[in-house]
Image 1 (cartoon, one colour):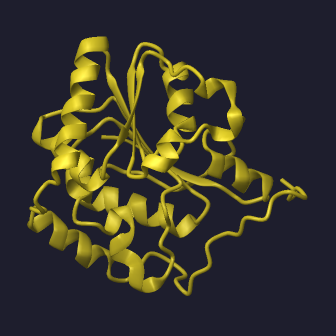
Image 2: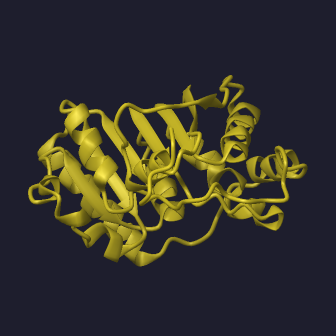
Length: 229
């Protein structure tokens, strides 16, 4: 896709040329020692409130989690695409969640089967895990790639919370415009779960997030990894 005049996004630049040489060691270390960071009170409150709304509005509906949902555009689209599911979009930024994306009418009234939650996913994922919640689907769309070699542990698959996140199950999908990120994600999932998953080129018919739209308009190749856990 040719780059449009309004698009100026760049593919992440990194000295790293393949899967990080320390990723396997890091994954094994995290799998052997569960992450025990204390929960923040605001995350406990946010988790409890979101579970209460889910049980009040659609207690029998399968759950979809849209992690790092930003302004919630993807969460709204997912709620409309899966009307028989309940969708929770989580982002740590209150300003992003409260933003009305370019005045779009979709944001005037949220779907009934949707909740947007301000919380830190490091806690939210573990609280879900502790509560025994299993997801139907889980989306990780264009997370911050942290492309510097020294930033491996800041990528979700390099973080100590990653093993607990995988135990939430469901159809897990990660998308990025940096192929190395998805290659590492697939490597990490397979190493910790033995589920085979491969990085694949992806060309959506309709952009699901503002970042996806920007990357498509900039002519970027997009990649995703999808696995049923």
